[in-house]
Length: 554
Image (tube, one colour):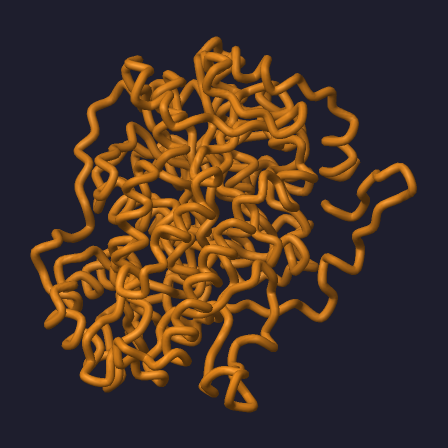
């Protein structure tokens, strides 16, 4: 059965029942139909229950073979429930771009899914629409200000906020708008971002209350004057209206796993472009209601986990008790040079060649961040016992436990061994620390991530990037953490360098401040903020019948 067929065959529990399991009083619940709901933020202020243990699920460097990070997150939460533990999951909302592009769905897989998977993968509760509307309102008010006389003296060539759409659409990467002059507006070069790459998405996910959201919106730098002074959303008097559009969306969404484990699904910035984590508020809800809060960070640990730890945990005052690194034999063999079509055959030599990728991620978590770590080996039918044993033995040589995980096929029961190890790790002392301190300059912080996490020899900057850093530091933004936008397919900024590359430099080509989100973004290599569709988009396989049954959303 496909993922969607498994989900459609399942029996969902009313969301009121899931709320009861999570200990959520009905007065905090705002149902969106029978199987999903928003939870009012007042719960965090009124529920005095001590926070539980925070568990981060991350992964090795992704490949087309799959690593199963979200599936592992869900299966682990279910596995903890199978052990009798009070667990709650906190996940990101999928973007329509990847859903209709490559992935076809991002709600877990097999018997480790969050449901209703169709709703979660599509419009869900309308959060992304609200974020896109608020972002585009800001852009409209900026261009209207220029058209109406430009009292702030905004330089039309230095507008840094872009309109957005939650879809992969390379045609919108570079546009010219306001064409025709007169009442059509002021003609200028412009661009679109995908919604999940916008600063507003990052602001939304970093906010700790409605008023904190409003304050962060106010700080967003949207353009520069002709004299080089930053112009903010507050300067445009757009903040109140933007907050109005987001006042419902800011409440975290409650859904469920196939086994009835409560799951908060809220926000979804990309980890290769932004910070790649669900909202702080969803994480806080999971911590407040569960003894174990299981969350994830996007792509490999060099991206999602680094940003989760150095940005989200630092700003929100969070500290994980344990980290899970998801891996597969198939993906490791791809890092060892095997083509996707040949992954079904045993290949111990390629596996050994690819293992350094996993080792680097694991040792980064343990040695750089000082956190207890376990490896989840997601088993595929084609994996041989010898291949799985090689991965487990390699990790054992590092002093790190690796356990088989079969949550795709067996749900929570397939994650019992992983859950047991996570419980053990949560009882061990952690020495959590950051990769860098905020006291250094922007270049120093970028260098720390590049050399300590990516293992680059150093960092190179284009002349434009050097000038942008100089200007940002002069404007008082030098004390912020850094968010590196980088390909997800390699430790380097070259997607073709697989495994654990050495002897490379990272090239920073542009730098901008996300003042509302609270970090400086450094763009490396050829990373883009608007993806494109593949030659055969997943959308081609999707349809709906006369009874409303969706197919092809795998």
